Image (cartoon, rainbow, N blue to C red; front, top):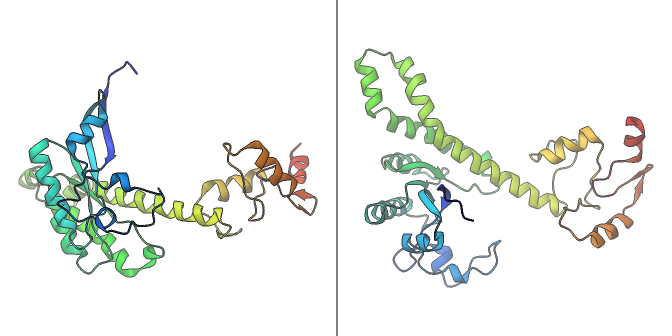
Length: 274
């Protein structure tokens, strides 16, 4: 690549397991992880290493995302990142750690919001956590903590000095500026939910029609186009070897005049639309 252009790295990490405790990096027994053997990562990775890996690429700003630091001390990671920023200039901003279902969620969110470079928080919800009343309460506190931070900024004070009403200040200045961390957490939560459902569906444990699915390709495409997909005949991705796709189709049972093959339009649906 010969062209040079500025790059904003929207998701990157630093860590130093020699000085800080990350359970997945420091504990002797590795954690079962979807990426397999990660022993090569169990070493310090700091801004100098990152810039060396970036090479000739012009990385101008980065977003540091929490690195599963010791969950007992989420603020310790933020303080460490603050020191990194002073010493090296990286990262630019941070998505910090917070556990929304813990009793100290309100205090942690308020203290995280006090750091000017914190733009949001990440909490990876466990299965069923979004139905937990404590998690929902913590999610609401996320917006409150950001509102308390924004209301002390100079432009809010200037609007108040000019005689703006509280309602006008809220809708004009506070609400647009508190949506960022809420949307960050919402996207992380939705992505985690879709990934979990996709994994269960691949194993044949996903939802069944007519239950609505989080995955649009299961809830919308099959209903409109007449596709069929069952646990006994899983849809094969495009990169799957053709020989294996063919063997899957040959084993597909016939059900009511329709061939239950992987994402094949049924004969009845085809004849009805032709």
